[in-house]
Image (cartoon, rainbow, N blue to C red; front, top):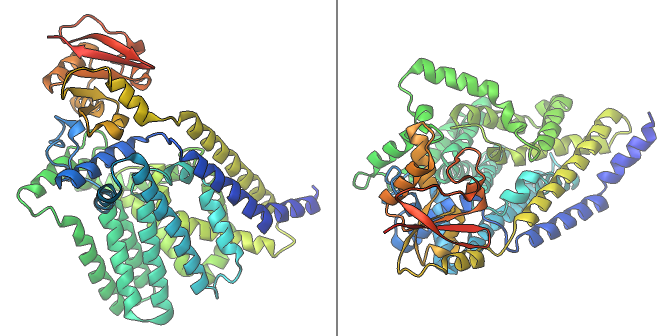
Length: 503
């Protein structure tokens, strides 16, 4: 094996000029991919919640009529993210771009916070490459390439959670009370944004306990609890708490009720143990996370002695986050890996910087070269997928619904039609029917689904290619409409098929 070649290729790949070039190319592709960006399902769902909060002062999901009362009041939602989204709508108007850009600006703010963290703790991170490598790992991550411009709460939780850790480290270095209180507040705000953000107050508590800062532990706990309690601000009005419990315990597909409100202690403990055994799946869910995960796990093992001696707080905090999310999370999903990314990136960067300062460890150098190239490759694939799906969907939606002559019809359509037609029509989402089937725990045929659509007052149905090729909900396979007493073929616009209710 040519060790000098490995050493030179490692030095080339992780040279500042190459890293800057990779970041510039990724930034250019990211900006280009924002134009006519397609709508992710959660852009639509969370966007609608923010829309009704902005326009009617109450979180609702009217497109989900007939499902757990969502059309009247949605009490299970990602509160801080939806509240801030409603503010964006109030100020800048209703569009997916505005909501997506809000997430992206939060993302950029995180990089500034990371920069400040490494500057303040430059005694532990003296090399500028710590920041450069951390940014490279996160910014070129396939997971972040598409979720950084998606209206979901994970990036806001990541920002708040990292801010909580940042302030906690400031407390350890200064022993002042203010950073400790700020840390607790940020941890609570992470919970206020998403229930699974509770892992940050938990990790802070464990880290303070490990350092035996018992007085600080009390202050942190009080600040965290008070901040977390913001989540309940609307639960004590009227019967909102009962609605919240009803909705979270009867959630159609995720079975959250069994996660948070299982009456059997034995079953509850068993599920938590099973979650721990399956936590690795989150790290290897798809090509969007697998490369970063391998780099993290290898760095954890490769530099464990260095981490435990010089970066103990970072190590304990990171491992606690992982265990806490496994035990408290509703389900395993790769998107929640975003919560860990800052800490994973720092640990990988520690390994990379140490390798830059040695002429040995050729296996590790070769492995990192292959992995970062693989990450670039998967990132390129992600960009290709995004560009292939992008289109001027608001204009398409306007054209499709424009052939309907009725005044104020109720239309069942794909989720993305909320942009920007929710202001012009009474829309229903396919999810109103999907959850109807899921809650029945059986598969429905086309006639039952059409009957249900009529029961909830649907005048027109818009079928897209996704629903006509859905392998699970096989109601409209190939767009074929069987004889039925409820709906008939009305017309086609581009790739969409429209049905009209029979009189």
